[in-house]
Image (cartoon, rainbow, N blue to C red):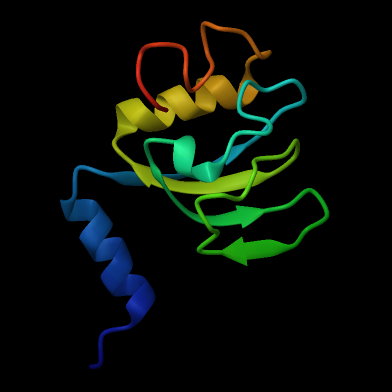
Length: 102
């Protein structure tokens, strides 16, 4: 039996400290306009509000309202991204708020 890439990927995720989540950016999110590279998680794909999927986006791609970020990272870092994705922009949830990058 030949290993399939998707099964191998899932197997690697099960043994790693990181996990994967899909996070949708809400209206007024603190992340809107920030580059993907500002996040402290790996973004492997971005789904746009109009249904397009961009695999392996550049670090300079700006995050927009309605984007779905497919992120890999430690659970605590993913929770920060989820919180910022749903929060109204403000200094307490922004990626550059002083508590480090998301």
